[in-house]
Length: 141
Image (cartoon, rainbow, N blue to C red):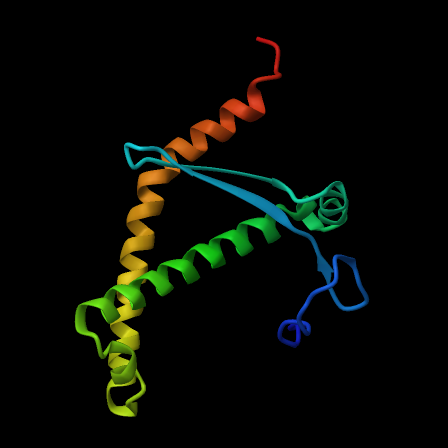
């Protein structure tokens, strides 16, 4: 049986388990070094957030991956639009035109996919190594 799509609940979302949804938060810390390297870590916003997530399938891990990846793609799309607007000065106005909107959207999607793919390829190996080290550090050898 296919799930009925109902869309997001009305905002602002209430933390915890609710009749129609569960909501929890993460804190993401971002650090950029003077060399330009960017580092990040994330953790639960509060102990209540961890408790809410632990009551979900996979302890909230799937929801976290989906949400953080969605936000990363959304931010990349935002950046691509800002870059195009700064290049042309009339990009947003042209995107309002029905005749050019689909072509503009297609080019932006291609750019977001390209940048996202390149970034995932760059980061995946190190991310996997970090996770394996973190999860195996307590295993006696």
